Length: 416
View 1 (cartoon, rainbow, N blue to C red):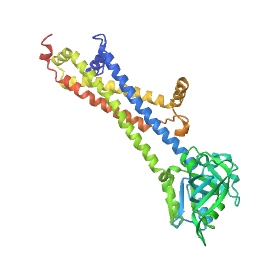
View 2 (view 1 turned 30 degrees about the horizontal axis):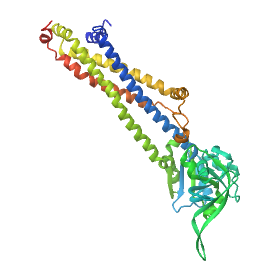
View 3 (view 1 turned 120 degrees about the vertical axis):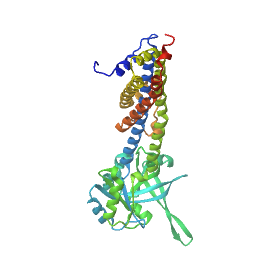
View 4 (view 1 turned 135 degrees about the horizontal axis):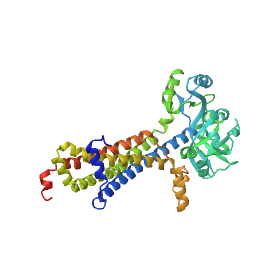
């Protein structure tokens, strides 16, 4: 420390002031603690939002196709050739056909709308993870001509349908008869129930064999489209467009990011709003530094005057007090980043222990479809929070340091 500038030596010495029973040092410590808690809280909240988004993304990708190619006319002919060509494209792991349409499902007096999707059980496992989400029955129970159906758990509950029972599927297209247009319907046997953990699918999707769905919706040998499983789901939009062009380009292309765009956009908006709101806590903690430094300047008026009479320029006095504010901000920011990261990494265990201690369940799986509180720390978020917090601290030091630099030696020493 012998080679350090005297501004640094004096500034750090003032922070360890023992005058007035160490009151200034205590206030400086409280400023560090307040800033630390503000930074840690912001990091934990952003980490929870990241974990929530990441968990739901994984669940969505586990039960839905990464991309779909549908015919412009609503159907695809010669799908076997198209599927084989799609599988040969780089980045494509699987390409499976499907038949899909909206329909009404009825069981007794219960009736509701849902999407009926016809699949090939032997190929469905390569495209999505719904086969592993069948809790009752099996995907292999869907046999052509047997008119079996697998319902989502919430859909089955709403219809009052059980394994081994039957439901009536009413197609949106009618059948012309001499007496008018009659609804086209078919009785299906419930051979399975799946639970994906996503209400969108559990409530609005039913699976049947592709041949039975094509017969019900009168598609003949055509299909609605191809569903793609990709090696990198995060590049689904680019890969899907490239595959569509390679197959001739006469397709409607969609991917999972488009189908759930509003959902992920709402998460990003919420995350941004939480950052702005909680940043106010950091700002309050940062501007406590103003009060701390003003108190130090007030207490050290005589010392400042002596420094000025010994030849210290205003910029040297300003640097002396700026050092104090920067050190307080740096200490609070670093400690807050460490505390926030530590809490985020152990949040699930902490919440579990708190639930056991209080007997209160904070995360209800029936509401949030999550049994725990996931948290994922992103390095960019930590750097952004630390950078903004430290910048606020630097700004907070400007006024007290400027006030100290303007101290007139004669005025300060008049009563001493």
